[in-house]
Length: 195
Image 1 (cartoon, rainbow, N blue to C red):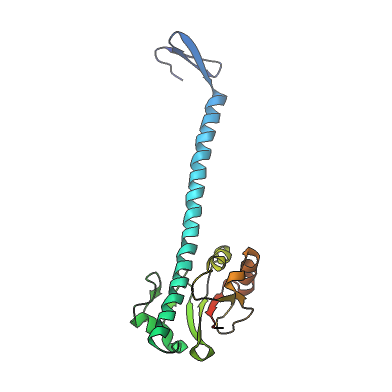
Image 2: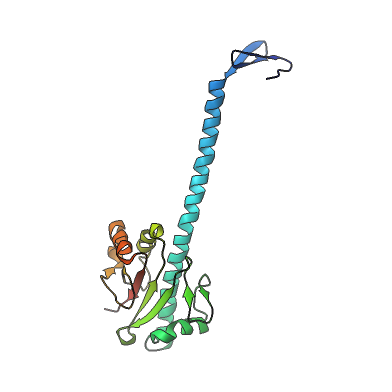
């Protein structure tokens, strides 16, 4: 290491002459400070990555709640919810589909993870269901646990057409959410079933 004016290198220490005093920064101290800086940068990156991961779950949760609210608006226009084959088209034509959903013609709805979104009429038009396929397993429990408000009253694993093992959304804890996701292998449904 080359030393310029007022410094000297001896025994792996860098000596500085400041106001007549000799100060040394050892290689060990330098390494320690670099380690702290690297740890801080790594922590900031981890927090940023975690925020991005949670943002897609938050977005999909909002989409599902918005979709449930939009479907209830259809019933205020009509006396019952539309038949399953017409529900997506009705939402599309009334411009009630959340903007984040990809749709070609109102009949094919894709969620943010590329899985399908199924909309069905239940109980002869008095209820409705929303099916979600292709939810990543590492995000599924967070998604299931995040929907606790709005018109959706039950959640369960698998197909919305089967309505297997329904659980009231208010009763979903992390263990229940993980069980729903594991049983459905990333396919989940929510439904509005009037009492």
